[in-house]
Length: 580
Image 1 (cartoon, one colour):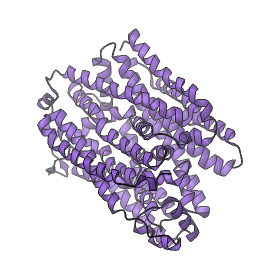
Image 2: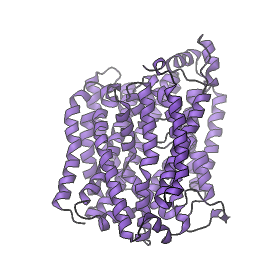
Image 3: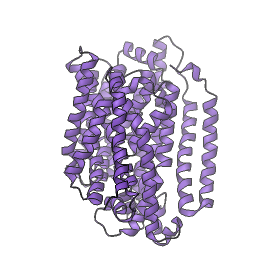
Image 4: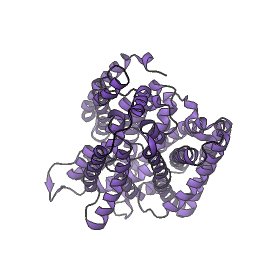
């Protein structure tokens, strides 16, 4: 694929912008670790929320969506659509609590909620696990996607593509800290959306169909279903491109609350918690997470899905189905637009990489180095260590990239290795009896279970999720009842600071001499309305695009009603009582 002078100018501007931001924010980021990792806890909701969306708008996702559609049709996207249920929990249950906790990383929560040697071990274990192998795997699959794009479009080999991409990102992230990351995200998100729309438009134009609805005359009907068919043959749904009912049950009934996955963590952890904790106050934290959830599930998917459908029609026989998206760019995006499209993908890549590097480094520096190695150093020292650690993580992730074949392969491994831990991450906020050993056992159990399934059975993803969640849940519940609860002093201090609601803290509220915890019934109603809002908007938009406005209108009408209910309930809340 040949780039014109205009294409190269656009690419140059997009690559230069984050470095300009870095030069403006580097001094402030170097003041202390709170500035470096949380931008001084003063981000407005629209900045924090857009940064969340930009981070999840990764270059790997359009490739993965293209591969999903080729295998399971549109319904295959339930592998990540299910996360809206958990994201709404984060909005309505956890966004305020994370901001109220007043900690620097979500891993530091461990020694706020638990005590003693077990809590210290858990903090170190979780920080190292998430900061190195898991973070480098995430960076690795995003690197893999970027290398596929550059290999197909510009002819670069994988190693060159990976080193160039990471060198650019690592340079500005190590300087700018979180403030520079989120400010660059605002610009990068807009470019990434524009690029995705352009690919979808040119790809659909290349198919020769007169309208989007005309795709249905060229592809099997199963491809366009939002939900799997309940008619089964031999345990799977009928049709060439069809999500199995078993997979749908695993995604919708188990995955969203039971497994750990970046951007969809039960309890709102990870880099989402980082953004929540960086918001100005609890209200901004909630609104940021709400905006992220709506944009993540309702704004982003359809340009990728439409491009994936076009790729299925234009490249029916390719072996690497994920590469279909890159082929669309190479073959059908005209000169003059290629710079914008590639720039959008580079923007998506850099926004994800910048967050992963900053977020993973926060664990290694704050929760391992500062906590256990050099607890007495000054802020300037920790910032220097953070900048060097960012570059070290970047180099380690290069090696990981070289061992991956597909993005979906890495997605599935992450989901399996964290299957079952999600319930602990939720209940630790709402049930006083959960202790440090509960969480330790929930981390170890799925790894042991996955190894056993891989070595001695033929159970594969997504059926493995159901097995692993049952095994892990049984393990951590057993360990919880066999080990003592956290000391009353720890529980009372946590309750006074965070003030979680629900009946799970009645006992502790009594010990603290405080009124009973607030009911969570209203939050559950808000959660139900929020879930309906997201899915009705998602499917209303899709039905309108694929089948016409009359098919989408009922879905969108339901979305309007759910949104009105949520808005009315929000406006009636007394925010002055909870804002910091």
